Length: 490
Image 1 (cartoon, helix red, strand yellow):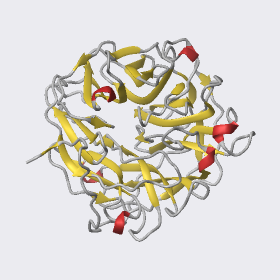
Image 2 (tube, one colour):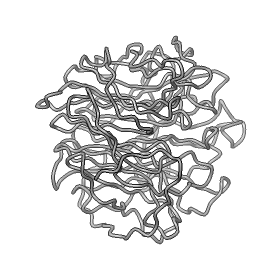
Image 3 (spheres, helix red, strand yellow):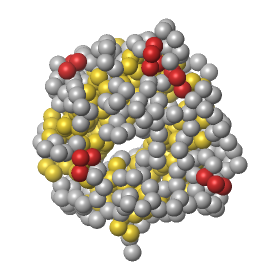
Image 4 (cartoon, helix red, strand yellow):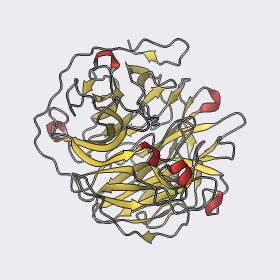
């Protein structure tokens, strides 16, 4: 996204088998499934950041930025594909996007993976950038053979004069009984006009797109979900990331109603010069229950550190009180951020499986030189009524190992969790090691950085947990004057 833009550096169109390597010192063994193939001298190599993922049955696709530029965007988009429920992967680059792979865009950012069951199409939407790091188009690469090969990008929407697109996200209606089965939706904002909300829908597998009627509101980070009845709900931050809200369509994306506030956001700035923020991560169960997760400090005295918190809705219009995910006690020093929630769409009611992959610091009182970045995972097999103990996945990472950006060192503005057809959870995340040569700082060691796309070596099964959190809210951020806000639901 612009202002928080993450760029994927990806290259050639051919799919190549990737040698999968086990990562050391992880409670969950992990696999490296994609690396940065680009060699242009203008971005940082080898770096992969900001993955998204999706499973449909035994096929899973993840995509991420590759070859991150300091001031925004990447050289291309890499993808990793599994056809055996996540046991093994092949990888490649999406074709025809940037000038480094036969395309026209100077850079690309913000990959989002979707699957259209009705048309048998896989999609990765992304943001095409020009050399001035302006979002000039929201685009979609399509695959009609299960993600094995991909076509050149289709334009969802090209920016007009003065427009500057940012932070796209895509989803499809895969419920066969839905009146809008087979429609796909892409959300983004126009940074050039105060982060104005934009949404488009497709009825032909992403070949053509129609602009929806949307409310006049400034937003960022919308992640649409589709309920079994065809209603499209878009949890989304306001433009200043001080409130979480939503907008909803009941007519297949033709129009979306007013954006309403769900809750204010209280978030502490994470230390260590990490690029992060309280963007929402949203997913939905088989019976249409929506989960939205973000980082928030409301349960910590004095907003001392961020927990991961969530709210749920079965209607898309009424939302539960914000709850804390009980990763550790409210007296801990742990700082949690950049969550990616996954929900098993084959579960519902009291047996909903929820998993969250996230980054964290064991001690929030750290600096760029001392922060130890780690990846964690936590799950629930009863819809969040209770949780299993959190699992340490990967790390520690030294901050200088990460690619540098104008907004801090970067693993991504989001990471991802997806459930395969067998009900096993997989986290997808960027993991950095020390540069292979050229010193310990990725910013100067390029092209010898060592940050790849990783996932769990085996999926995480559901299990009964006993952890709960019923902590009181003890901190609320004061509203900032002049910032964009939503209408309050009355």
